Length: 587
Image 1 (cartoon, helix red, strand yellow):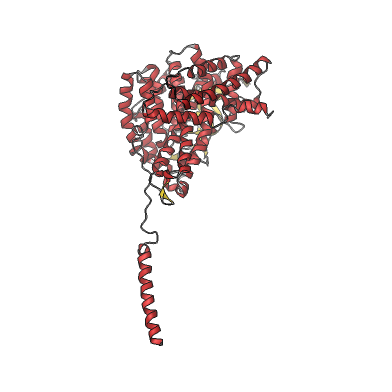
Image 2: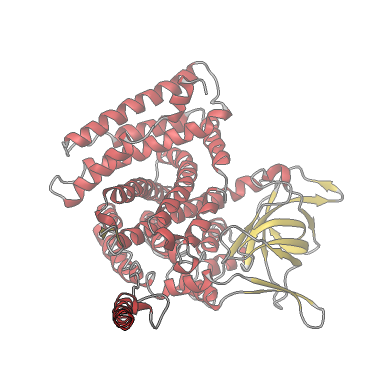
């Protein structure tokens, strides 16, 4: 009896072992199993972006579009190929500072990944700064540049930051015929990597960030050769490896301080290759943008040239406008890149028996992010088009006024959007969205700076108020007129679109009523309402652009239905006028 039981037990054990091997054989040679999740694919970022293609085809003259389209087809492949490779290299390496050599000599040497230098060369060869200056495209140069930066920024390894400041510096130096400025300008817009220079923008000091007027302690002492020696502490200098920088200081002559700030130009190194009276005290440890060196600098007699006399803030304003526009490009393009990845991944990742995209809630989540991105896209391109008109001298007074209020609105709103959208996008990848080696989390860390750099949301909201007060309300009149013009087209008679228009017009009327009530009382808009007012202006304007684009599309166009849905979701899916809502609730 016992022998029979033993035989039966042996048979059972053999069968169980066989069954175990059958079910768990995948793990016999590896603890991870055979399943490999297919990663999201990044294709040609221009050809895979009908929104960008259609916009350029619609607004650029045919001969200009032909030139731009040809270039962007090639560049769209590059940013998903070898340029992306450099981006990934740079993102995996943090700059290092070597302050002393082996013999105790102070050297302050920055160690960068070779791909950082490769990105420098790419920016020169692709004309990412030079396009609006040398392309002979006149008023269309800025829109062309915006499209190219839009493709480049998410693959730039943050080289987009020095490019922004270089563009800003070029805009200031281009009108100066004096030798040091003219020579520098030619290098800033060079397409030759061996000649191409980048610029920094050293404004922030220890006492304050945006409060530049009251916080700048750096002084400028006149020298016998007509230059100035700068002495001070610059607390937050991005792109520390730049060739030149524009910076602010107060002139001190015979012990007397000039009350106003002056703008100066300096080269970071001497002809002998030594630092120009500059000591790099430390590299900043930042939440994001770790690919790029940001440092604390001590200036000890740094040789500098005066660019303005006592009009430092006004003189550097054009640079700030341009860097804010570049900031907005980064915000909108990062949203696009994460959406491209999330969309592709949703068609590959299977969960609960079907692809992610087949889950209605997941599809809705992506659709909502798409609404945010497309609204931001049309806003971005509109402002760059306006900037091209103003810069080329083709703009009328109304367009100049409109640009004055739209630049801070664009920067502050897209700077907030990007953090929210990118955070949502990370969730679309589940655990993979949290893994650094997927290359995805870096976008979230880097996105946070976009609402801080070049003015926080509150600072820019106050700038919006300043533009209203300084022009005695003229910018608002121009803004209102432009929204009304955007709402005029009605070739597309879709019921959904007309319903969206009705909601938007009602919100717009309420916003105008609020504005009129403040102006009738001969009051200034209160500081506490600045952010809500800015959000209201931005949302209404973005809604008007979405409506205009959808309303002017041919009814049979395949993109028409999608754009109508996007416009409706933007207009009907949120509080367009939070400043009015807050006013009614006495907030």
